[in-house]
Amino acid sequence: MHNHDQSKSSPNGARQWLHRLRSGEAFSATQELVVLFLVTSWLLAFGLVPLTIGSLHISRTELGLVGADEPRYAQVAREMLEVHSAECHALHTTVRPHSLAWQDLSASYHCLTAGAITPILYGVPWLEKPALYYWRAMSFFKEFGVSDWSARLPSTTATFALILLIYLHMRRFRPGGHLDAALITASAVAMVAFSRGASTDMQLAAPFSIGMLGWYAWYETGKKFWLFDLYFFGGLATLAKGPVAPFMILCILLLFAGLRREWNIVRRTIWLPGVVLYLAMVLPWFIAVQLRNPDFYRLFFLQHNLERFATDRYQHHQPIYYYLVVLILGLMPWTVMSLRAMVDSIQIAVAEWKVRHNRVRYLGNTRPGDAFPEFLVLWAIFPVVFFSFSGSKLPGYILPAITPITILTGDYLHRVRYFKLKWWMLGSHAALVSLMTFVLLLCPQYMIYERMVPPAKTFFWAAFWAILTGVVIYYTIRRWGTKRLRTVTLAPVLLLLFFLLGMNGWLLDASYSARPLAQRITEQAPDVSTLATYRIRRDIDYGLAFYRNQPLRHYFQEDSATEKVNVIAEIPQEEHILVLREKDASKLPEILAGRVYTPLFLYPWQGLAVYRVAAVGTQTANLTPQPSAHKRR
Image 1: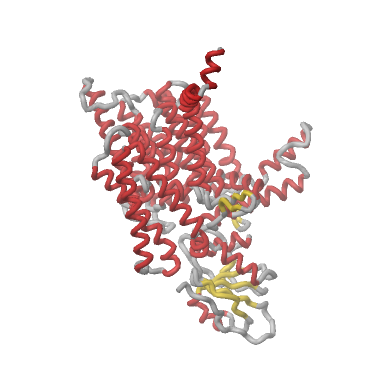
Image 2 (image 1 turned 135 degrees about the horizontal axis):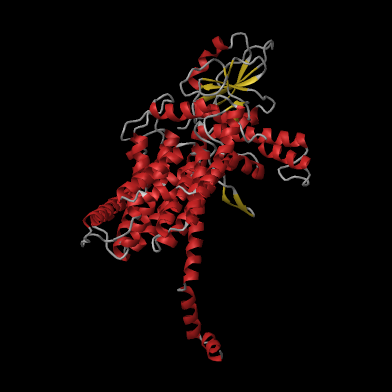
């Protein structure tokens, strides 16, 4: 004991002790978790979650809700929360009962279910999607207040949980490539984008992927404990988007069992406690919402599932190869490595298949007995093939296919870490990252000037940094090996995220979100509560409705095959704000004949004009000069 303490007190002994500590498994795991947490937090939350330390703003909410779906889903959650809060207040109770008396327990139960059964939008039932996203958004709204960033937390936290569980699963079953797999997943463009969306896509993809990993853990270990993952997270995925989740799970498992000729695994997967758990999670809401809305089954299952898949009713038609393009873009900056990993995994799967059928092992079978590549390849391919035949295609539909591909990529990079990559593959990877850097560096310039060909100076500097990025990646990996590929690829991704959101987030906000427009309207007309629109884009229409917490109001009926909500279609009699396209302002003398209207401002970022329209009967001369505003030039 004395000698041990003395060795630690000497300089050489202290260095040896620190070396043993740093090389220990516990220290390595802690170091990996710190890296995983910091990098993933930056990728998923920077520019989304506001974070301030003293006077230093680490992160701001840079981008408001965009598209039509984000503000619409967030508004549904807000209205459900308003119903919940009103009914709980009327019952003088909370979700937590005041006592164990029957009256208090009954009141708390009614408070718990108040507003949580029927999704509502603008006061009417909204039965397009199940309620998982809305429940989670309601909880974040209650905790942090109603905002665009809290509306996105369901997707962000779901993605974070997926990344952590990929790390833990791979560390348990495929140690070595676990950190690569987790960070590659976190930094793929599709994951970064959808983790920041107030939508149901990640609510499906994350639990679906966790459940599939849990099933394979059961397949490999035989321990029933892991089947709880499949049934529990499968239940969450069903509550996120409906029957598509169990359908995809069943098809992938059947394909896997058929490929391996192990049909008994399908029978053994049907586990009574898991089935009970799944049904207990899923059936109560589906039954309750049907009892309150007799049209639910017809609208949800037939119209928003079967008809959406079979037809182009909602105007989302795309060519058959659409999802191949989505995959190439969604896997960036890892697309080259991911495609190589897929090819490698398919070769391993074919070798496994030959071994099983020939019962003779041969030299080309590098990982005999390993079914993991086969499972991941089938999992990756099925959603892409299945949704490619859909009449309605959106990028988020194949988000569940991203996870198995990024896991395969991490596992592949671990297996080849001591080998030099072929020059063409390394060059292709460096060139792709360079191209991505070039395009993203030019994005702000395009948003300001709307020019595909930027000024020479801007083009030069974007090209310079892009080429430098590619050269650094190429020669770093050539010099220090494949094990540096993760670090040298992640570095430009992290910097580009800061460039886009930290330095140019206001440009994205002004160009694509209704938030700054709504804020300016509130500043210039704080006393006017009603807002109406005339022929503006749907995304801005829904965005203004969310930020002003009011239903859609159009001057006239605007028929659209994609419109699925009741819209108030009339010119308001009371004083109101009108938002319309700048080019339509010349129609106002005809549309508002006899009404008093005055210009407030132009919003050139989105080509809009904003007017204040007086109530019917106001006797004041029309003031119709066009408001002045600086163009983007």
